[in-house]
Length: 151
Length: 136
Image (cartoon, rainbow over all chains, first blue to last red; front, side):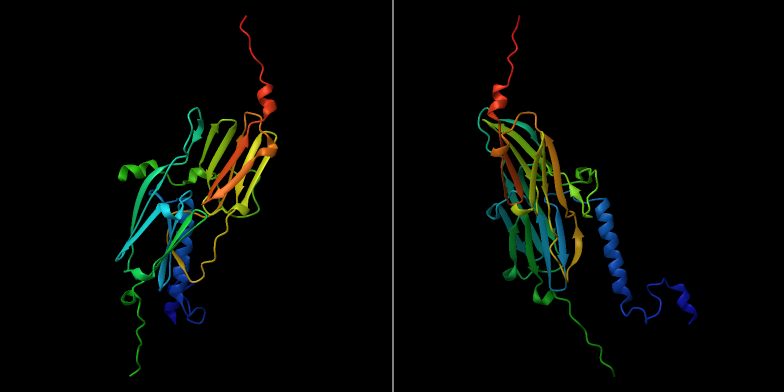
């Protein structure tokens, strides 16, 4: 087994790991996470985190100060659109701002997913300023396991 | 619509609160964006803390330093992979030096949809303690 030495340690020997690529994927995920920690990528509003598995995807958005009825969600095929508006505090005459950092106004954000969504099963929940949208994959867009037959 | 988005700002690395001394929890700490306004005999502080519920908020007033802190917990996402990430989950902390006397017993706080709202009534004595300056 001379070739063994050419591979990095995670590859080496099937006896150590039956899923070398899974390990690599984990390293990749870890790197992404670290990279993201140092350089947040959010340039659009609201910032999103997207969690997925083979069955569904959960899109989470930080939307503090919006009540559930102030957020409009629509899903068409593989496109998710979020809309909303946050109004400023209604100040009386004579009231003064010492500082004003929280942004107000309207937003629209569109996310294109790599699969079609089963529209009838979409669920959304808004909790403590975080919106979570559960988007199940349409049945025909779920990954299929292909059985390898021994001949 | 695109212009509307420019008015809205997302949390950035600069908003990470400087922590000294360090915390025991290894978790990012953000300085939440806040509005402060004066209305009648009250000062109102409004801070965005997504992920924080009413039981996770801690408000302390020591001398004239008001500290707002909020803790968050990351929900377990067993079986899911973060396929795209734009925001970090973390705690919040921010302190303000209050310039006017505040009635400590009258401080009220509420959390709704991840927004903390603290109402600080101005102390009556503070108003009386004002020293008029005469022109000579």
